[in-house]
Each structure stands twice: as structure tokens, then as C-alpha cells.
Length: 110
View 1 (cartoon, rainbow, N blue to C red):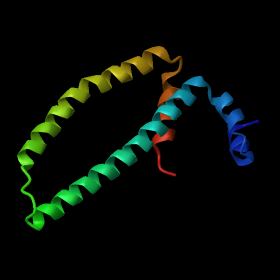
View 2 (cartoon, helix red, strand yellow; view 1 turned 180 degrees about the vertical axis):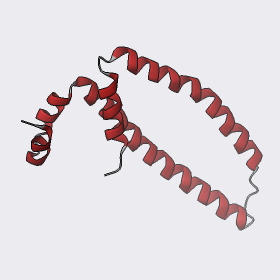
View 3 (tube, rainbow, N blue to C red; view 1 turned 30 degrees about the vertical axis):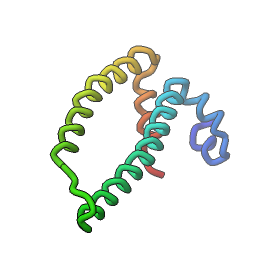
View 4 (cartoon, rainbow, N blue to C red; view 1 turned 45 degrees about the horizontal axis):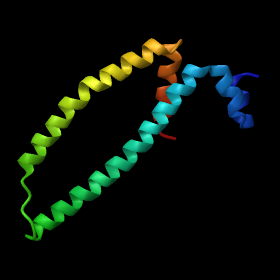
């Protein structure tokens, strides 16, 4: 059965078997990352809107420069860890190309 027929028939198990384990792992990582990022960015956006509204109404005074320092520190901490994750994935999966395709497929919008 070719992949297009598997998708049309709704047979995702056959499609996953055709693509391989590396594709499945990449897809799972991409899907989980996309879901986590949606939740995280929604929460962060709601928090910042609340801060903007509270500051605009004069209820609180927000020190935005301390937010910038904390953000830059977080980015400095996360950057080397993401490089290690990439190295781990490419070293431990038999097909890095299929894992990359699965990651892309999991991150894409429907």
C-alpha cells in the first residue's frame, strides 16, 4: 500500500510502518513541541496583556528592563541545550532525514 492510499484510508499504522521509527519519533517530538509552544505562548501572551493593562491603569509599575535581563539569561541557558538535543537525535536515530521529516510534519500547521 502506498503512503497516499494509507492516508486516504485513515490507516495511520500502515503509514507509520512505511515511514519508519525515526519518522515516528521526529513526528512525536514535533507534535509535542508544537502543543507545548501553543500553551506556553498563550499563557505568556495573557500574562503580558494583563501586565500592560495594569500598568496602563496605573495599578502597578512594571520594570521592563528586568524582564529583558531574565529573558536574555533564559535564552543563554537554553541555546546550548537545544544543540545537544539535535546532536542526540541525529546520533541515535538510524535515519536523521526521516526524523527531520517527521519533526517538520509534527510542527506544521494543519
